[in-house]
Amino acid sequence: MIYRRAKVERETEQRGMENKGLFISLEGIDGCGKTSVKQGLLQYFSEFPVLSIREPGGTLISEKIREILLNEENREITARTEAFLYAAARSQLVEELILPALLRGKIVLADRYLDSTIAYQGYGRGLDLGFLTTLNQLGTSGLKPRLTLLLDIDPAEAQRRKKKDIPDRLEKEGIEFQSRVREGYLKIAREEPERIKLLDAGKDFKEVLQEAIKYIEDIWPAKSWP
Ligand code: TYD
Image (cartoon, rainbow, N blue to C red; front, side, top):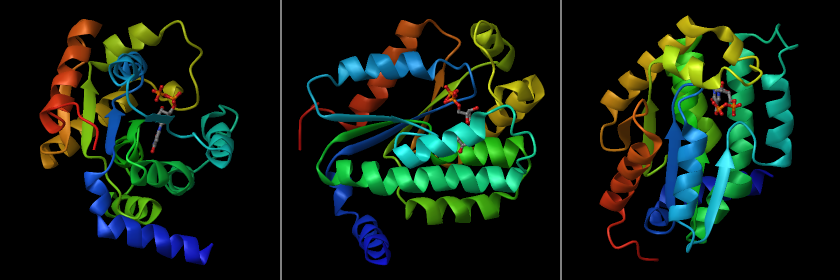
């Protein structure tokens, strides 16, 4: 295990892998329409090898952690414990699936990644942003997406869209929580404008998807395979 850890860190630090594969994440508050955009992008990428994942989850261990995190009976989880659990689920996902896929030159499409921790546990729950940044760094060996598509939407509209679903533990936090998370995302996007692109998710789905594809083509112009 210790050997593997060191190897992952070396590989990430070498960063030769940025030229291989393509790592894209989708972010936004609950009900922003990430899942539909992800389906559209999967079609767009259909000729290429793609690893599609969601957080928390994606591996056996991470799915077990997901069950703890989203189970609405687990009301006593503290904000810090919550942050550690998300980081643990992500760490497993990075080592087991994301890094190996990128090293093989695949496209990795992630439904949430480390910005969710800053937005939800940081701006939503009020945990210290420095602590969370360190946690994210440790849990991912510093691996960041090349492009992050942030689907921005008014929390009231997002709630209307999700009305039919049974809410999980985080969705039960309500509209004020989602508003803080949204503001958090917007701040993060302002801090990293190169990586994070803002999409108006209140628009028609097709328009949102077109815009998402436009941003992908900006960093991957020829749609060519490395
Ligand atoms: P999920 O049902 O997958 O929601 P969505 O379809 O909106 O992605 O549940 C994931 C929940 O976990 C969502 O409410 C956001 C939250 N979350 C965090 O609070 N921190 C994190 O680091 C991650 C990855 C997710």
